[in-house]
Amino acid sequence: MDRRITISSSTYHNNLQLYSTIKTLINKFSDAGLVRLQTAIDKCDDIEQLWVLFDNFADNTNRQSALSIVRGLFIEEAIEKIKDMLNIAIDLLLIKDLIIAEAKSYANFEFKNDIQDITDCLSLSYDTASLCLPYGHRVASALIWFALSFKKRESEFILSKSSTIVSKLNSKISNLEAIYDINITSILQIVLDECVSQSIRSSAGQSWEQRVRNALSYIVENIDGHSHDKNIPSVEYDNIFICNGKRCGVSAKRTLRERYKQNHDDVQNLEVDYMFVITLGIDLDSNKLDNILSKQGNFVIVSAEQYKLKSYFFTNPKVISSDDIKLGFDRLIV
Image 1 (cartoon, rainbow, N blue to C red):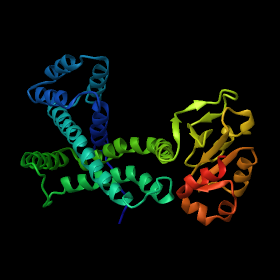
Image 2 (image 1 turned 180 degrees about the vertical axis):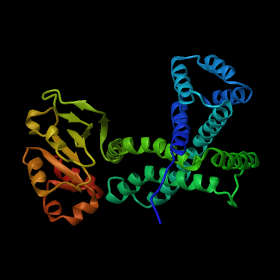
Image 3 (image 1 turned 135 degrees about the vertical axis):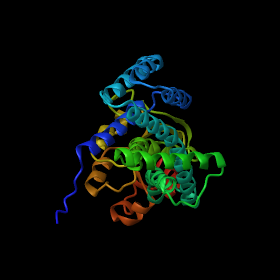
């Protein structure tokens, strides 16, 4: 028995047409614009009417380009198929934002529960919960879409109208999947993953810098934002703050890799009196630590978990635990 997976050319191209249509139209129209476009498409009886309709809706460069691409995707296709594909593509675009909003709301609620007892926002436990938040958006969106597309689901929306819309969509999906051999549920899952992934790629570093600022705001005065050193412009500060009457620079890096070398100099050459590298400490080995602390006036703050775990942290007086920053500043900034 031949157990190889086979995909026919027509199956491949039908699924590709649907995915390409969704990707081409995404963010090109408002929800109201998509509804108007869908309503107008339903009234088209032939190809010529449809292309004229496209011209009427191409009221800016982005929409003109998008509709031209969609037109190219369906050259020599029957009007019934084009209308079916455009119709379901618009349906999926309209429900996509609802699913993502629901997923983010649920994941955010769980995140708040996870961190409610964590007081140290620079700890590894807080960081892990924060890092998992965008992943939670993805997982929740997949679970919600599965629940909505599952034919025998028992759960319903709070609004009866929403339930009716989803029930009709499920019926339409089943019908079109049978006609064109397309996997609509999987296609939308791909699109959902791509949309949610945008937040995953951009959140970690920005989140760490904000958490560092939040942690310092309870301890020090006059926190300034990002700047370059006036004496050595290649040295960057994520923050400069005043503590015990001294100017202190901050290099906030969740993980260091080799970036710590960019902000590495004796403070006697800089505009600040002290320099603090604030990092989780998960990739800060003893050699890197010695390199940083070899410079005059440089200190390191690491997560409490890493501080307690590694002896070269807790035995070094120039290293501060994230749960002991105030006492550390009082001891070192004199």
